[in-house]
Image 1 (cartoon, rainbow, N blue to C red):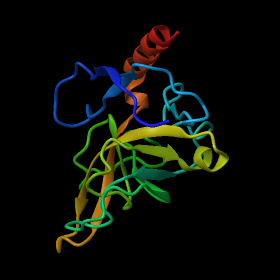
Image 2 (cartoon, one colour; image 1 turned 135 degrees about the vertical axis):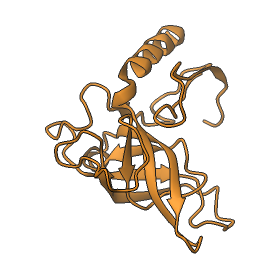
Image 3 (tube, rainbow, N blue to C red; image 1 turned 180 degrees about the vertical axis):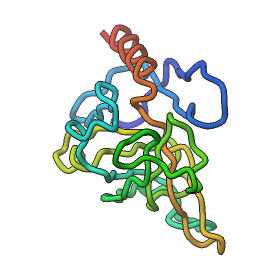
Image 4 (cartoon, rainbow, N blue to C red; image 1 turned 90 degrees about the vertical axis):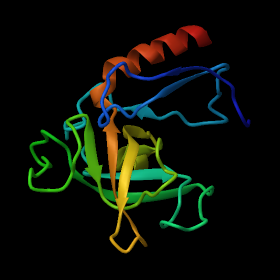
Length: 179
């Protein structure tokens, strides 16, 4: 248990500020199930497939702040049942063009629950999380804060299903290197 060396860092070739905020690490050694429970990225089906991902909520896990301008980072926290606000192109949760989202089709917007320092953490589909199967819908990219600067607001995640080919090819390469 403990720290593991990174053999390779993979990032997408795509350029642009939004929707490309994802990186994958290939570790130098394998990690056993006694040390970590693997999460499955939602890449087999689109995150809009309610037969596979029925919940319109997620669980966030991170080590970030509890509020802006506090010294609260570094403790692992879990917040469950965060409403997914909108997913571009989703029949039930499409993003309202009048809503301030500012994201792309490769992202989705979730409610409050994350803060500075949580970037890079996952959004786990609520039903799978409760069942202990941990399906990652996205990777936290950014969020906002209240006008008074006292509360963290919203969360914009890069969708895993938007990067299925990138995730699959990196996983195959990592599996081959890991034996």
